[in-house]
Image (cartoon, rainbow, N blue to C red; front, side):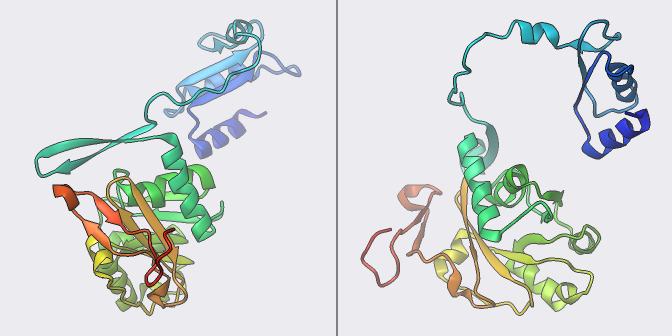
Length: 273
């Protein structure tokens, strides 16, 4: 493999580690990878197999030889896979513990609900500290293979520029920003490739049952954050808002705290779901 090809792939992937054989087919791949790593800030480790590895290339042979033989036992994750932070009136820094299953479930919901695939480009204007940033950004990127473009803090002109320049296919914003995008003609621009755009609800808005419509000419979905850890996404039927989550009332701040409660009962139906 030519060194310039290794460099191009390394730049494209932003690799953190490179692995190669000491010698193969008359070449010395580990030595070439070491030379590539020397000029790439992203590479932290160069690892190799076989005898006579070049200097500064760590051997994996001993690690494999010393690995316990027998079946590998599946183990439950120890502790959270992700910790983010929020604030309360009486506490400026409150940790939120998220397990791997919770993060993957949130991402799977978005990928399946919006039919995402590897060709999508997600433009996420929310930080990775709450259900919107995690649910519409980090989690679907991790499990769906789509490209992720991060936009934070929010700047409207820069956001409009990113919609066009990045070829974004999916994004989500609060209702006020969605109205501005429609009014400014951004969503009608022939260069705009958004195939789905989301309307982010606050729990208070969702609790009031208000569901304005938007004439944006593109498929719309709604994302309702429920507290600090979770959220629900639903696709609308055209511009009709009737496809909002078919749940009962939302109750905020019950029992003197900031929790969000959603009645799991369909309107006019006594069957619990």
